[in-house]
Length: 234
Ligand code: URA
Image 1 (cartoon, rainbow, N blue to C red):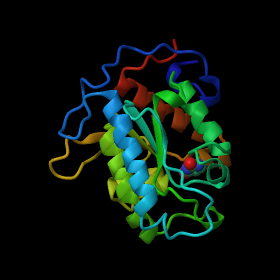
Image 2 (image 1 turned 90 degrees about the vertical axis):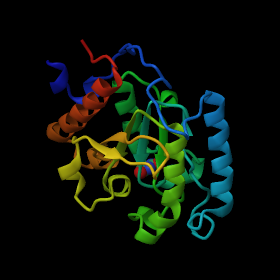
Image 3 (image 1 turned 180 degrees about the vertical axis):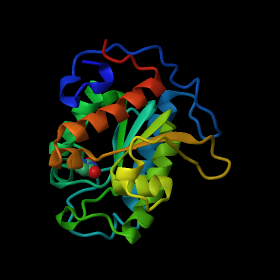
Image 4 (image 1 turned 120 degrees about the vertical axis):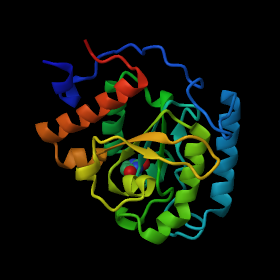
């Protein structure tokens, strides 16, 4: 089977990482020069977020905030929608069923969870897992933007509609946007645009677990791998 036709669930064998200069390709005034700087900046942002986020400090019904996790100097950052039940219980993003699928996707790319950074648009679980509302995104979204500016990844992957809508500032649906490279433009003076690849949310993939949907997501991931210089399965 050709690599680009390989269904996601089969693409889980080990793949080596091609050479990838971590900080060399980043630019912009907010780029930390030392991985420790990024970790410290992320820890400080987390503290500030938890103390002052207008959404997370006033929302009720969630147990704890789910800030994000992974390598704050990662080349690849995934952005989801909002914590679900398991995330709310554990304080970690993407650890329920959708999280297992995301982890499978990450491993199919030859990476581990620890090598990427994972965050959500909202950092508090919405009641009954409903879609984030506009005022919630407006309140919580700026902290995600700060997370991106700290990580300054080479590629952002938006998972599903709400993340894609926030990052690309569009109401066009995910089915039309997935698989098409776009760019996120940081606020003026804060560095260069970052390539964005929208793809389906892993929860959508699980609900629509067809060869077509799996193939589309795998195609998207391979585009990201090409961009990052990650080796495809041989
Ligand atoms: N878990 C998350 O952390 N985010 C999502 O968008 C879905 C599940």
